[in-house]
Structures are given as structure tokens and as C-alpha cells.
Image 1 (cartoon, rainbow over the protein chains, first blue to last red):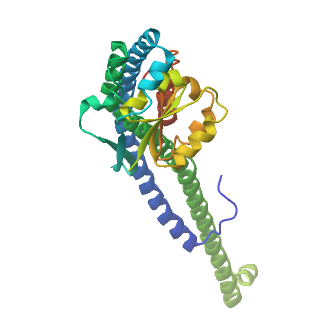
Image 2 (image 1 turned 180 degrees about the vertical axis):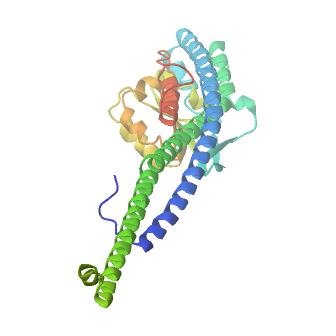
Length: 222
Length: 105
């Protein structure tokens, strides 16, 4: 388990111990970040789903009206009606920060304030179904923008959560156990060294005493 | 100042023009991918694409998934709802959680 390319020194041991503390703290912080991101994401994704269902239902209704309108009008008449749009929509994009994920916030502005400017045609040659279709679509616009905002936020958050989760897992399952194993390896190696030094010293002391007092000779003579 | 684009089959999107959105009708996927890239580079913050067109240029769309702008959003077209838009939301959940725990498989 322990890597063989670490040098079993005291300096390395203190370095590794310090590293382990930092890693543990990083792991805890990232885990908290992941949990909070997840909590926010869950709320957001539920909202996303609701909005999507609403927009899709609205679009379906609007499309139905368009089909109806087309059936009673000639192709050219429809084309002419939509040839020169009166209204113009522009977007103001600002940013919101959720757990260090930057999320765009859309705010839309119409060129004119008159709500009736969405009808770019005279009412004489078009069917009323077309008016219904256009008005239902325009009611949908703010929900569609909200959907765009929320869906983009969900996508960005999902990417961030995935990244954070990978990091947490890497720390939890690779880096922390590895460092712990290395610390264990070094400390057992150091203990081993200490014991062998102790034994060597005892042996040397024995030899020195033997040289000075000749215990063995005396024991033999008696 | 950003703008909003709508891409898709002509029948599905022509109504958006009256609202003041810029419409880009496509019958085939041939130039759609190219157009999407061009729109993304320009000042379009939101690009709505009909599901049927989107399914033909999936790769192009996935490129913008993780970038902040533009937001590429699928909408149902005149031919009906294919469920791709909902599937995209589920994909986000899967990416974040690992499996779809919210809306079922």
C-alpha cells in the first residue's frame, strides 16, 4: 500500500502529518460544499421541471392555434402578416452567484411598452385564431425566459456538483488513505531504526565492558 | 445587450417573430449546427431550438451545456412533444446525483 519512493525521515513524517491535516480539512469543506450544492440543486431542478411542463403545455396550445389559423388563411397571408415584426425584445444579462457557481440571470425588455405591438398585422385579412395564437405565445414569453434561466442554472450546477463529487471522492478514497499509509510506514520504519540503534548500543557497551574488565576470562579462571 | 434566437422548422417558430425574437427557420440539419455556433458567438444569450431539430444536432448543443452563455433550451414544435426537453432535465439530475432519483427512469 505504502509507496516505496518515500524517504523514512522525521522531516518527511512531519510534512506528511501536516499534509494529512490539510487534506482532512479540505475534504470536510468540499463535502459541505457538495451537500449544500445538492440541496440547492434539488430545489432548482424541481422548479425547472415544473416550468418546463408549463411551457410545453403552453406551447402546445399556442401551436394548436397557429395550425388553426393556418388552415383558414392562405400561406401568403400568414407570411405577409409576420413579415415585419413591430416588437423587439432584448435581454439584459446579469450574474447570480450560488455557491461560487456563476449563473446568468435574464431580464428582458421590449422595445415598446404597448402590449398590442405584438400584432404586426392589420386585423382585416387575418383570422382571429392567429390573434389568439400570438397572444398565447406572448403570455408564454416570460415563463420561457424563466425556464431558460433555471435550466441553464441546473446544467451549470450539475457540472459543478459532478466536479466537486469527484474531488471529494478522490480525497476520501485515494489521497487520505495513501497519506495515512505513508505516515504509518514512516513511523514504523523510524521505530525499527530506533530499536536497532538501541540494540547496537547495548552490544557496543557489552564489548567495551568486556575489554575493560575481562569478565569472560575471569569466569573461566574461577 | 443580448438577443434571443429561435431555431426550428418554419411552421413551429414563425409565431415568435411577432414577439420580437429573431427566428432562424431550418428544414434540415445541414446548416443548423453551423448556424448555432454562429449565433452562440454573437450576442445571443438564449437560443430556443425545437426538439425535432435539436435531435439532429445533439453534439453541437451539448457543447454549450457547461458554458455560461448561451442557454440552449429545447421547445416542442408543431409536430408534437418528443420528450427530449424533459429528458435533458433528467440528464442534469443524473449528472449531479449519479442516478435519477427525482423523476424516475
